[in-house]
Length: 364
Image (cartoon, rainbow, N blue to C red):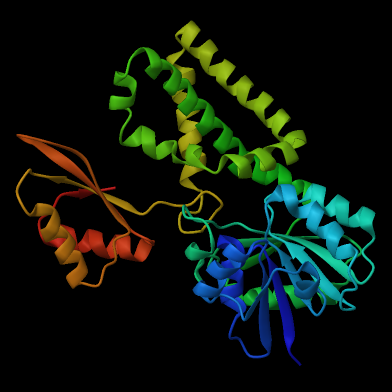
């Protein structure tokens, strides 16, 4: 028997899921696009077997429906699906980064012909849209499922077996607990990064030297402040009941640092850094997460003609793919700093070994 899968929202996540399923024996994938222009992009990428602009056409024969639309649109589409005569036993799931609200919506709707299982693949990319879709996006990432208590185990097993094609690690979590954890490890860092960048931006209004000297490390630790404003508006408003207590805890932590500084308490500052370093040292390094890892190398390079080309040629000759090259600084008689960016850790490590063997000073 053929399993029919429908993807609503064939962007980075939806497109990557489609690529994981398409071409597998006994599976067909239909993509729903909200405009003809986007449907053309989906067709050009070739991530699905069929594209439609009709919600009903996409849904009516589906065994599994993935809602890969923004968090702010999830309830709208779930309510639309509840008005359609779905295939009996259909599984509806989503990929939103908040779970409690959509679980509550599904519970109130009392879906007639389907069951809802919340989902959240904890992986992403600095790129967006169907053009960035990849079969490797979810590999070794955690894929969280948040089923309600009344969801039959066989439905959960069916979805888990399907998701095995993503090569992600399936984890089962209660919806509200999911939102509390993700709020702390992803949503809170985004707020902090945005607030920090806006603080420095305000200082820069009076003295442009702030922007000039904020290169390198500052740019790296605040890169998530460049995330999509509309997407994050919806996420934070949806998860505000979790975020407000987290922000109060954050303010208390900042107040403790203020107290340390006002009292000149060096030992307390030391202890704060020691505890942070101790916990950070046991965090998993090689697991994908919601905040995209960077695979960068830095080189001090002299201002010599052709040096950039030679380094790029050496990497290319050894089939090591670069995703970006940036010269952070290069002035006469001052070594420049070259940042080489890679798509994955394997290419990063291979490049490091090669460049060191060629006598290039490399650091991370």
